[in-house]
Image (cartoon, rainbow, N blue to C red):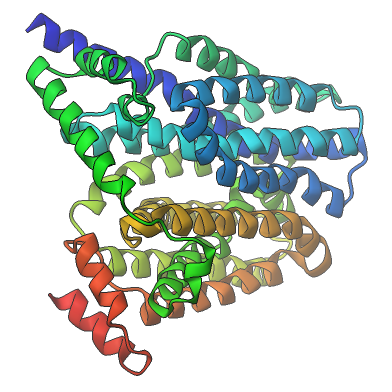
Length: 471
């Protein structure tokens, strides 16, 4: 009994320590939201350089996501997270001390490499350390920590922005806070074990069984070690897909859908709110200090909605959940555009915009975001998963980068109302894409989905999708 309690306690410690990578992911992407107004005055930013400062992290994250998985295969999951913690720390210090836009963009790019690396390495580590019965809960803890990191950034921004509003370097303190969890992540991971699956991959069987015994009962540890070895034996003889295989129609189609799912998540404009929420609320009429406090509501609803979304994934089919989520986000964007026009200059406008951004995030984080990542994990057959996930996640970050770069320019050139009309139009395109191309995956094995894609006929897509959904 005591051994079981100790194993559960150690698993909890693994979750807390490793998901500090997710917390840093969230904090570093969210802190720019409140730091940017003060940074703009201190560094003399234009709308374009604001976009560069915010989006340079995202471009780095795109590259970090592509290479992070390969580096964790080479170095080990644990070792890779330790290196990422160091990169988080030194890039944070570089951003904090940046004397100009160029230096800031360089260190934000390096910070992005850490964010992208963490986005693929931490979930992999959690999945490989967890027992099968706790895997779903353990892996989704990282998603929860990401939005918790963003909420933490919004709270820190609000506190420092109000207490130190007269200090032109207040944004440096906002950025510097991220160094603290980076330190805890580094020293915490030094005491964590390596993934048993990676150890088996490298032929270190004795170390693998030792790690498994730390988090499993003896019989379960031996059984799982055998399953891991058998799994690697099967996969080692399997030919993995390469870019050349995109010439095969059914493979090209799955990758096309994967890219589409990834881009759909981003063209909702979610990260325009997560990165520029304070700017949006200021543009609507709030003073900077009030906007910082009001923006906490966006972070809070994100945390709550992710919890609801994780619950709904086990109850609701993927396709309708995604469509309902997109209808909700698109409606909120459309209403922001309408009311920004009708109530321009009104004292009610900032409160209306705040309520609509909260509504938007409830649909986004409660339906669209969790379904996106689950679908990307489900649609690719085993031999195609590395290629498909790599391309899809890269496109997700690039779309994120382009929106992050262009949003402040759009806000300045065409105004709040028209900018959100543009996102509403993109939302309608996203809904049309999902309805036309996305099959239902809930309750379908990877083999069934592969057969569906292999037998796909352009002229009969709608029929095939409906049949698959109805089965």
